[in-house]
Amino acid sequence: MPTYFACEWHHESPDDPVLLYEELDDDRMELRKVEEFRDGRRLRSDRIDPDSLPTLSWVEIPPLEEIDADAEFTVLPLTADRFQSVWESAVDA
Image (cartoon, rainbow, N blue to C red; front, top):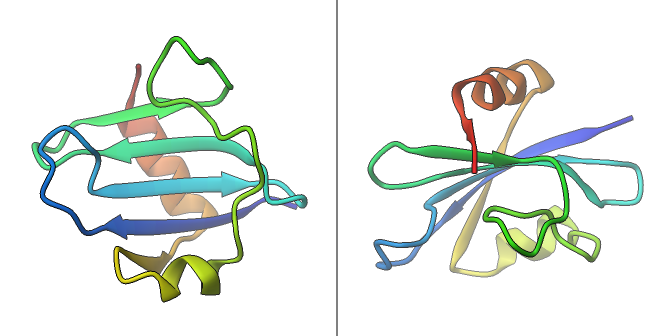
């Protein structure tokens, strides 16, 4: 059963996303991801493609507690319905 979370990324780079929305499988591999930028753009991906951004990770995502322990990130709860809404508002990269 998929799990969902959002993650704020605290940084000053204008070229990197500030909010990540994730859908993970039972093995903690990304199924779908949306990256949201400061200007409100949302880009989505549902595959590993080194030639496009965003792309899904090749490795499993660490436990949420580990991500949240890094001061650079803040993990936020996310429901399946909310993820789907964000997914539908995003565009393919």
